Amino acid sequence: MFSVSAVLALLAAGPLQAEEQGRLAFVACPIVQDTPTVPCWLVEYQGKTYYMGIQTDVSAPFNPPSLGHKVLVEGTPTDREICGAQVIEPIRISIIPELSPECDELRMARPGVDLGFDPPRPPGPSRGRLAFDYLDPPPVPQAPFAVRNFTVDYDFEGMVGFRTPRILQPALEYAQQSKASRLEVTGFRGATRLSDGKLLEEHAGIARERAEEIVRMFRGAGLDTEFVIRAGDEAIEGGPENRKVDIRIVP
Image 1 (cartoon, rainbow, N blue to C red):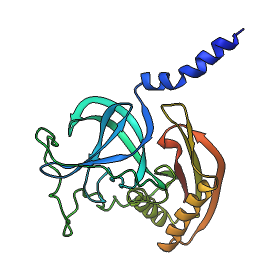
Image 2 (cartoon, rainbow, N blue to C red; image 1 turned 45 degrees about the vertical axis):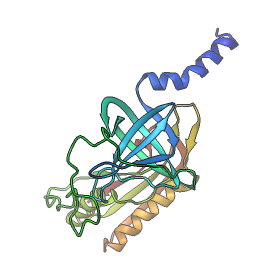
Image 3 (tube, helix red, strand yellow; image 1 turned 180 degrees about the horizontal axis):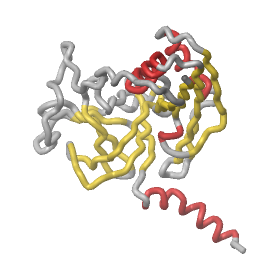
């Protein structure tokens, strides 16, 4: 039988165990660090400075945060350094919607602080040139068609974003080619346990909001079929994988 002191010790060890496993989850102000090429985004937590990514365009896998807002950072620190900061990889960042005017730090370029690699495109306006080309049309689906699942992932408290077309375009193509008789769209709501032990939950109702938004996009693209919307309002604790919409296409 456990003593009260033993139970309290186990509870207190929770956040430490999460850090010992390598994964971090925390909320902090983003920092812009200028470099000789393009700015990079940093964040500080418990006395350490971490690298998040570089300033680029919306085609990049990493979409930068915003000054004036805190950011939720989820990922695993590595032994690598970029911009004089420890790299988190893989990393997932989510902009916290509430305004945080104290998040306004801009650091000037200084010797020894650089990317260590060539950015995918020069700084400044893109003039139509994207840094990453991910919009190549997917292969045309071929018969025989079977039930197929697609998953749209989300930032914390996020809705459809710049990454969404990477999933929706292949899903739309499959639904059209298979002459889908039904699309079952299920939304989920996530909760993230921070490294300090606090639980950060998405707002109630976001699971259905996500599912309904996806259905509106399919209908807006001209998909005429039966849609079944499902959503559970329970916040599922875990990582970014629990913030999602599952799409089940029935030919």
